[in-house]
Length: 89
Image (cartoon, rainbow, N blue to C red; front, side):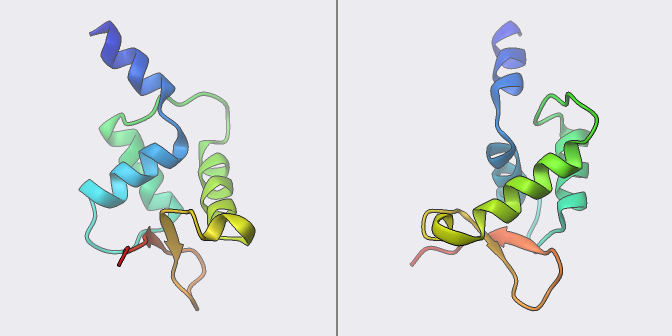
């Protein structure tokens, strides 16, 4: 049980968001929806006062600039904040 708790604590926001989009959704999700699943399924230990801000920052940084090529996340064009996983060819 200690190993499971340790792993949950070590999980990054990117890993938790990937798990949500892979396993718990068949459609694009907003950061708020992703965070709700992370919290209800206990995918990441929360600390601090602004977990949504951390998640949003991570998602937006992954879909901008030089990170776009290597990112697993994709922001739907023309939508405010709907994210999904990239489909690799």
